[in-house]
Length: 175
Image (tube, rainbow, N blue to C red; front, side, top):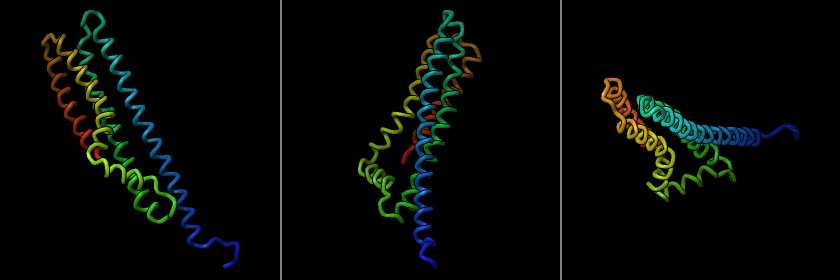
C-alpha cells in the first residue's frame, strides 16, 4: 500500500460517519413529518367542526367523518415513529458502538431508560393525545347534535373503532 491510499479502517470509519449523518437527517425529517401530521389534524379539526356547526347543525354528519381521518393521520404518525425508533436503534447498535465520539442515540436511550414509563407517556400523550382529544371532541359535538339517522349511527361506530385504533397506535409508540 502506498502512503496516499486510505487504510481500510479509515475508509470504513468514513462510511460509518456518512451513514450516521444520513440516518440522523432521516430521523429529523421523519420527526418533522410527525409534527406536520399533528398540525394537519388540528387544522382539520377546526375545518370539520366549523363546517359541521355552521347552518345550525344541519351539517353535523360531517363532524363525524373527522375521527376516521384522524385515525389515518395517526397511522402515518405511528409509521414515522416506528421508523425513527428503527433508525435510532441501528445508529446506536451498529454505528455508535464502533466509532468513538458518536453517542447521541446512546445518550438518548440511557435517559429514556432512566425515566422509564414517564418518557413514553410524554411522547405518546403529547402526540397521540392530540389525535385522541380531537377525535373525542368531534364525537362529542356530533353526539350532541345527533338526529339518529342510520348514517350517523354508522359513523359513530366507525368513530369508536377509530378511537380504539388511535389508542393502539399510542401504545405501539413505546420505545
